[in-house]
Image 1 (cartoon, rainbow, N blue to C red):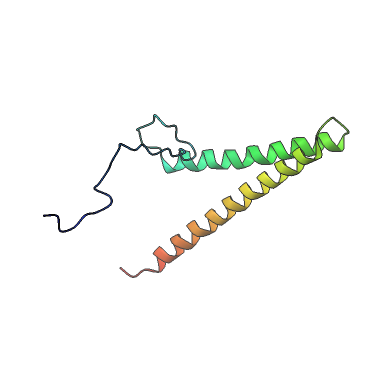
Image 2: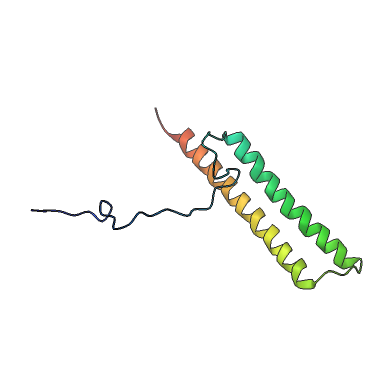
Length: 104
């Protein structure tokens, strides 16, 4: 007699999770990535988005054949990545300050 059934224990067919790898990780990597490397790559991605936006904006301003919507999308992507990086930085600083306030 079954008294309790957990939905996590029953599987009718094998499932495979399709997840996108985190920044700086490829799907076949099993080794650990250091925090410094992860942070450096994240900052490089923010910088790349800013540089791409600047390049497209300058091309549009100089009269080259660049679509306005591509420039605007690039500018918004760079803005979102920068704002996300700033918010992550704020949360890290807040967590650090909270740990420093803890009494041992």
